[in-house]
Length: 57
Image 1: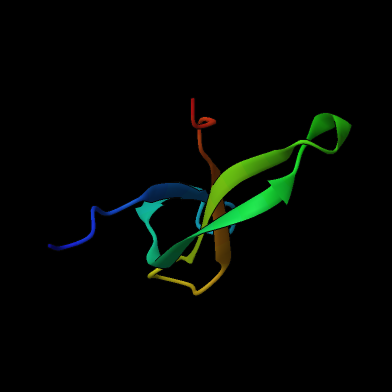
Image 2: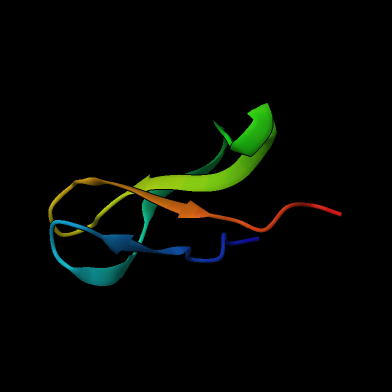
């Protein structure tokens, strides 16, 4: 089953790009509550990109 392409905003290119090597990570949120995010790389410049995801319910 192929992975769905995750889009994020590249600050360096100033455009939305599909992330390469995207993986789900946990970030610190308000009050120490963990937040889900996708972390990957920009296919054009290689800069690290993040996309904050909605919380699981």
